[in-house]
Amino acid sequence: MKPLSILFYLCLATTAFARGADRPNILFIIADDQSPFDLKVYDPKSALDTPTLDRLAAAGMVFDGAYQMGAWCGGVCTPSRHMIMSGRTLWHIPDKTKPGRNPLSADPKFVPTELASHTMAAVFNEAGYDTMRTCKRGNSYAAANRQFTTVRDATKRGETDETGSAWHAAQVLEYLQQREASDDRDPFLIYFGFSHPHDTRMGKPELLAKYGAVNHGDKNRLPPANAKQPPLPVNYLPAHPFDNTDMNVRDEVNVSGVWKNRDERTIRNELGREYACSENIDIQISKVLEKLEAMGELDNTYIIYTADHGMAIGRHGLQGKQNLYQHTWRVPFIAKGPGIKPGSRVDGNIYLLDVLATLCALAGVERPETCEGNSFKPVLMGEKNVVRNVLYGGYCGGKKPGMRCVKQGDWKLIRYESADEGVSQTQLFNLAENPNELLIQHHDPKVTAMTGTNPGPHQVNLADDPKHARKLEEMEQQLLTQMRLHDDPYRFTGQPMDAPEPEE
Ligand SMILES: [Ca+2]
Ligand SMILES: [Ca+2]
Image (cartoon, rainbow, N blue to C red; front, side, top):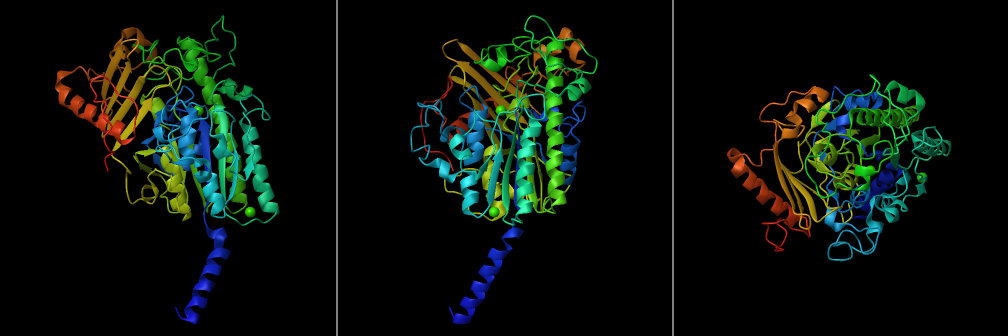
């Protein structure tokens, strides 16, 4: 290379470095325990008001196919947050306990040692980003969280600004204030997490009143009925029709305000509390977005809104997050930023574990070798609709092998099995025709009288319908393929115990 051209490249490099401020900022917002179907962008009939998220969706892209891959423990948050931080799949992540509840967690063939130094904040620190986080404590990935340069974590589920969601927003606002005061132009990555609407859902009084709910804490009585409460979900059931392998997990039996109750008053009150907490989150997000706008940094910031997993609260007779129905397996996912077409909507077929690879691609940062996710930047840029065709989910926080699901196109298979209890159930749904995964129990006149739904004859579990025997077989095969691909250490009855090389 001639001296002149070296000088030219040096100048270019210096310019690129000086223009570090042009690299996009990232604001990653994550709620704790929120079903996508709570939000108007996913259910226009929902009573929940989230004007900030509605505006974000109108200015950005809404994903109809965003999923979290699952959990090997009842605290679904824990593996979900490990997958987000590391970009690794369900059986390839560590656990906070030893021995890990993921049977592969101690095997370096599956889980790299020193993984934390290749997680989100470590990667962006290395690239010259300023990294900051606020979120709940506990059921998280502590070693990855510590990598953020600024950490303001605390669990805030109270009914006041100091003890609730406003506290998390205050941490971000203070951080931005300091950034402004010091004229810091480095790009930032802010992980803006909330502790709500995870229970205990202590709503603020004015928002509870709006949704007709009370912070119910008396196990010996039911909360008052109130016409302002959100209606029962369309797929509400008074009980789950069978043992799903983890019916006695804490979320199903011991959440304050719900416990084992599935009556209309309890469920509608709890939904009101969930909505009160979620609207408060929306209000807090608006403060941060306004601040970014006032600082002139909003347009150069990629904003992602999501949740660590969905939630049942009465849907299918369940209360918690320990299931693989769409309301719980899916997550809300909205993205806005440079190059993203306003008002766009895609399937995406993404997992939360794809976020790290995507943020790296958006920021022009090299992704760590340990990251297994697919970048969905091509989806954000309008070049593609999906990043994969088949989706896999697993849950085994209770009995083993537990629950698994697979989705391809409109078809979804869920299997439930507990060898000890003799549980063995299979569900097959066509989600285009039965998007709420209605079962025969949803057709009971006592149930339809409560929900006001009028299910069609085909809106049932199709697994035992001989017309769909071939589809069932195809989906069973697809499930096995996905279990092999992801090194799922368990097998269901009828599946070979082999361990072939993962397919390309
Ligand atoms: Ca959670
Ligand atoms: Ca800085």
